Amino acid sequence: MICAKSQENVKLKLNRKQLIMGWTSFTYRTTDTNTTLSEASALDILRQDLSVDILAHKLVKATQKGQYNELYFIADTPGGEAIGVALIELRNGEAFIKLISESMGPAYYNCPTTWFNRVPLPDGEYAKKWRMQHGWDPKQIKMNF
Image (cartoon, rainbow, N blue to C red; front, side):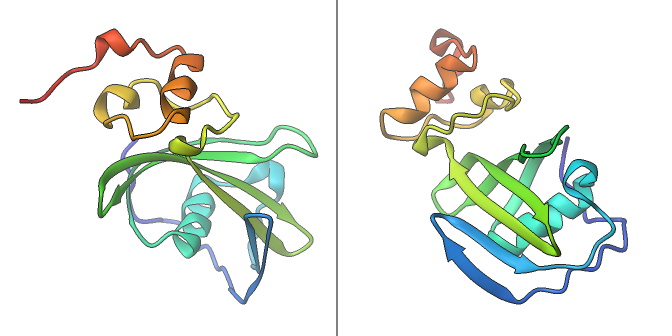
């Protein structure tokens, strides 16, 4: 899925409110709930907290109360392409978001595995372990020379 500008008229009114334990929250106005979060709203929320281009994305919606929406993305960063996941929760008129890069070893495993051969493995011990727990085979890395 390649990211495109949102076609929905999603209105987010933002007042950056707080940052607690890696979670950022802000007020918003949308008809979405935590279990009906649209892909367009998730991307708009992500763009409020992350100021890089999103090259690809996949939303895994929360199916029950207490779960987070998982928005997997490839970001075009100054250091090159990077894979991350944004945990998003909508609650009581606020959007809560937590960004986790693969170099942090997220404990979420719904990322498209086809992205692993597209995006170089970052430095550090966690990304390789996370990719392997995801079913990635490091022998299938395509080297570009």
